[in-house]
Length: 165
Image 1: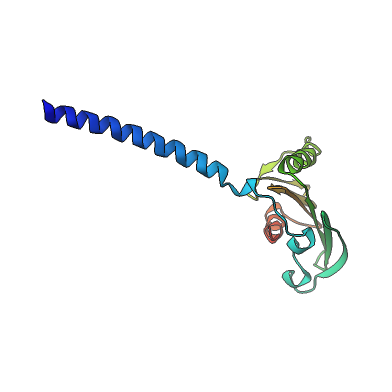
Image 2: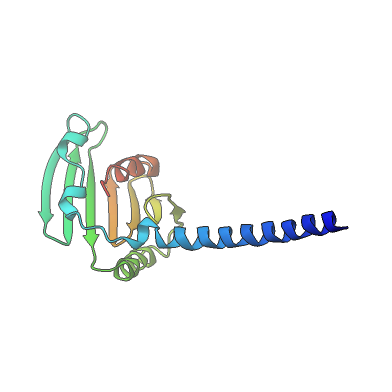
């Protein structure tokens, strides 16, 4: 009887210990989540360069400051050319970035959006196989990539993955 009682107590202790560990792991992973750390890299440093682009690509224009960067590339493809525009906004807080991301997403409310596994949250859409857009947020940074010309959402996503966050 004493032996059975020891096993019963050990079982209860094991269950309690497992519960405490499980709760501790959940709390610690929430605290150490990368999305709670602000990104400090300048937006221009996050963007792909002309050297990241396929042969024949032309860098067209660029705008950059401490909180915003935009870079435009032109493709000379057959049968038609195309363009690729990267925009990065860096905010002082994650909440501001979430607000901006939701504003962008709501701007496409009339389109069917496809969820994308980029950053902390992301979506994409294709408009008549002529324009594809990918937008995503990672911590306090919001990225938008728009590809024009005959394109697919997968092709645009491959370029979106080039952003160095």
